[in-house]
Length: 132
Image 1 (cartoon, rainbow, N blue to C red):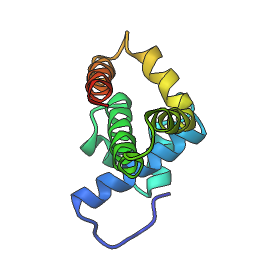
Image 2: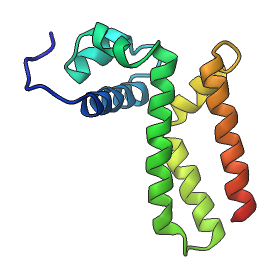
Image 3: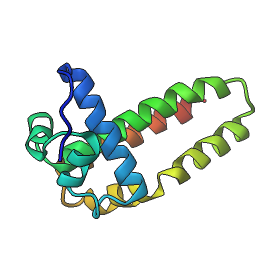
Image 4: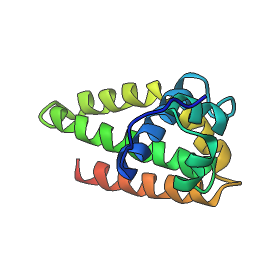
């Protein structure tokens, strides 16, 4: 059951939901993480999640965006490392989220929102590699 808490602004609540979903999706897996489980982990009702996200795929995209943003920020600390070391760091980072990589590839064919994110991700990676 959601806990009673002080009022939280919309951005903070959104962040709490995304963090809870990221933890569940990476630890338990996307398929085994129901919206009710995400809501319980975030301390909100399942209905609250739907105020922020149209569906579970949209929530997954928000998780992916958060993880990508964090990774890009962390990668700045490795900018002076040799190119090979930067690539190894990126691969190790991706391995942490192997469950999500598998989900993205599996859902691209059935989810337009995930397919669009996936395409944008590869375009970004192509650009980063070209300028590396």
